[in-house]
Amino acid sequence: MQIRRIDLADVAIVGDLWAEMSRELQQTVAEFCALSPEASDHFLNYLGASLVTGAGFGFLAVADGEVGGFALGQVKTAQPPYPPVPFGYITALYVRPALRRQGMGRALLRSLGECFRQKGVQEMELHVHAGNPGALAFWTSLGFSPLGFRLGRVLPPTVLDW
Ligand SMILES: CC(C)(COP(=O)(O)OP(=O)(O)OC[C@H]1O[C@@H](n2cnc3c(N)ncnc32)[C@H](O)[C@@H]1OP(=O)(O)O)[C@@H](O)C(=O)NCCC(=O)NCCS
Picture 1: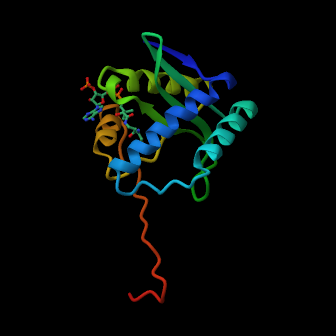
Picture 2: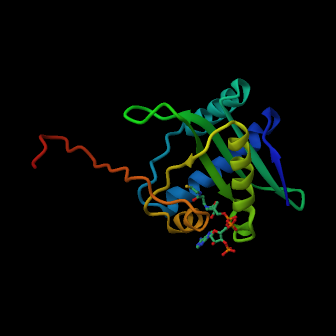
């Protein structure tokens, strides 16, 4: 397996992987958002712009000549009330189903982590859906632990009744 840095020529293949990931999460994770028809274009624009400006970066995993997964990250700055310290945000991580449990996710994360370290950040964060037990097991096995809970509810069309 090889891990290599994503560059602008990879935008289309990363877009395909992102669409695969989104379809899978829509089918398996109850809380995953409904994707709009423009979602793929929106992602491609985001990825292209973030690679051009350097705001984001990422890696592709290649096994037997085939792209098997990707990881994206960016450096963010903590917002008040936290001190304005930079941290590494993991925007996306995906490994094609047939290639899972062979260390590809871990290898992609290692590359992201090394890059974050070179950029001077000392912590990494990500969002994961509560209804995604495989991903939760993955992150936990790699030393991640909950920092809080993101809560939500649908607003009723009429007045709130609590
Ligand atoms: C999460 C994901 C990236 C893991 O990729 P992967 O290549 O299978 O992960 P690895 O093989 O590197 O796994 C490393 C360790 O994580 C744990 N792990 C990974 N997947 C797991 C699962 N489904 N159940 C339990 N533990 C798991 C194991 O401890 C594993 O080590 P082991 O195989 O030696 O036991 C992959 O399952 C995926 O793409 N899922 C769909 C997209 C997704 O949910 N992305 C994360 C969004 S937050």
